[in-house]
Image (tube, rainbow, N blue to C red; front, side):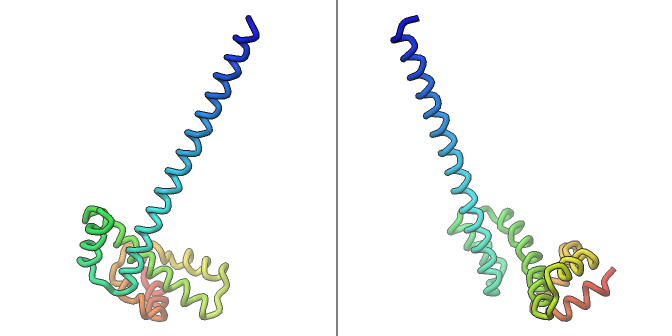
Length: 140
């Protein structure tokens, strides 16, 4: 094996390493892009829902400006509706002096997530957190 052969092997190895590194960087950039896109979509739906925009209008806007099909927007909107009610209750408990551990215990002990997910009537209590709290305690 000549000196030139050894140099070629090192060059090819360095080229492969550079290519592998470039691919890894591009893959991470793609992941970051799609994560940011998901955050943007979620934040847009949350903002529109929080502003009391009608469901049909949210679906129309998300389809027009984000290119998301109606069934996907509906799915995400339903998730947002449930999440926003849970978050409103968490905030209410925090303002009532509950610490994070107490809030977590309340949420688990009363199966809040499951109850809210399975009972859309509770969604209507988002702006009445004390009533929501009583309802999740009473509901079995």
